Length: 495
Image (cartoon, rainbow, N blue to C red; front, side, top):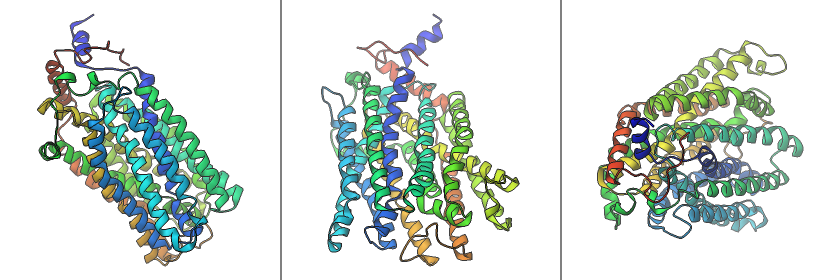
């Protein structure tokens, strides 16, 4: 064995490829609920009878609440130590709470009208507690799974593939199967959609627990027995205040998340495909067509991240996504008849639309996925600098700002559609295209996402944890641990 390989074996805590794939499913388990809640607007307004602006404000407030409780959850994760590890109990408890919450949310219509608002608020609060527990474990768990810069980006490959399954196949399932089966967003549709989400999320959660099981041990937390204890909230505040890289990453990723959330919003999708293009089912069909190109983008971004580092890849993806969103604006302003975009007679307009959507969602959404292993980098940077292991708090502080910013998405959608004349009900597939609706759609689907990516890219230029810096960080951690990333457990083979 060469000296370089031996040094890497001492420097890095590696894991098996299948464990990365399994643990990444924890994010998929929560993304399924994110996808499900994306259709809550239609349930709350169309079935539970709540006003549009009220529903959008309520959804935004729920995401804000999610962010506000995240630091507390981070503190709980960092202080948790059981015979089942730090992360596995949090994952399981979070998933159980989330299952109970969605059952409550989608039975709101059964209550007397006067009680529905307060009940759905309560159910959303419960939902966000469970959701935050499970998502926080995804971010914090990256630190123990692997610290190899060639392995951490592999999360991106798995998550990208899984997200295509959730958001693309999921959209096809709703638009081309459920809506076709039930005719509209009826209660029968939501019963089937909720049952499907619960079953899939439960299966993925079990697999995620299996994936992290061998690494969810104390010897993998920070410097192991030598980790500096963070005792009080004041200590946490000092750490957060002193970590500039966490602050920059949080701002950048939050803006990318806001743009990505708006671009995939269920109401915006209805406006784009159901009204502008005149065929809502096209959203699911085109989604399936873009699966292979989307996978190629994911694999390219993963390869680039393993070769050039996470920071550089993040910047490249953000700029390509930004330009793709901007290209939509002249495209639709010049196009006389948007309904020519059809799979029945594929022309230049259809091909260009599919390409732009593939690049906008593929590259524009890549930073959101890349940021999870980047949070682990920031956590390791703090461990190398201060000897503290605060992965739970770092992951949830990131989530706090992320939720604070992305909570604006449903609020923005609600106010924009209300401003163009939809104050009582959201636009549906039966509405007619008007100049004001086209303007609102362009603002929501293209202008705001492009502006968010611009802010994300500018902020990321000041982020310093590139590939070389992270190699130095892992060297320092390895030396502090006595040149052994795993003093009690043999290191696993690298991918």
